[in-house]
Image (cartoon, rainbow, N blue to C red; front, side):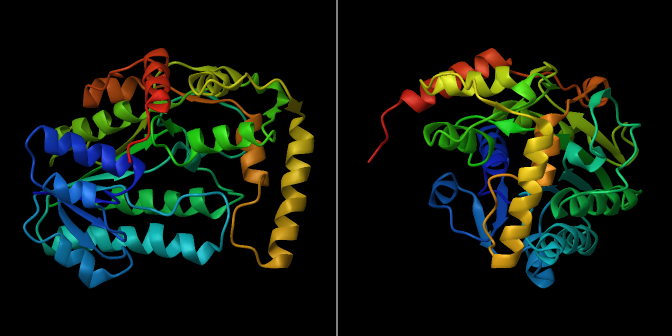
Length: 331
């Protein structure tokens, strides 16, 4: 039995479906119901990651854990992120120890090394950032540290850092690009010329199963973190306009300078805090820096230790996205 935390989410759901397809027994720990997963035969446990006893109970009888559940985003109280991402991860590690589970695959983010400048072709030797402008990367960095420090003879751990996951039913990157384009509010920061890498959802899920199969006490990947991407750096505007084209929308041609984007983000953060708003501003300082800088990574280590190769290219992923968006919505 494989326990997947956050199995009802975008990445978690893709991982669960691949596990089921190859014959694994799967239990999903998540806060919301998911009838579609139940129909696949998934053992669904509804609980919060911060509920220590519930997480430990969910791990009973499991052979391995894929820990994907987390609070993502660029805005919100630090405490909310800390509870979900740090305390939740501590509970997952305790569940592994209490239930003598010997394999843990943890999903992190490349944002843990993003200090604000360009990140171009770096490998996993790049240090964790010392300053973060938002709670998400800060708490994910701490969670990653906990997981890697837990690696040992009784529990083998590996961390994956997938970058900018997109594809059909993506509620984050893809959905936001399309929503802002349709509302006439989409802008390219600095013309969208900076090179970025990303990962199509099927490739991200594939990497998690490879890590699950490779991890074990003494494995080459044990106690290590890995960048996971398409391995196809491209100007940011090419990916954005590729997604727009897949939806039958015209390309984005409007641009805003990096300085202006950062200033707008800073002002909106002040306004949102003053009003006590919990929804995300259209722009934040963190998001402005992400959009204004290059971020692509050397995935040689994942290829070597995990046997990772993307199953689909960006072009093939965009074709699948276009087919999905063009398909009639079922009743």
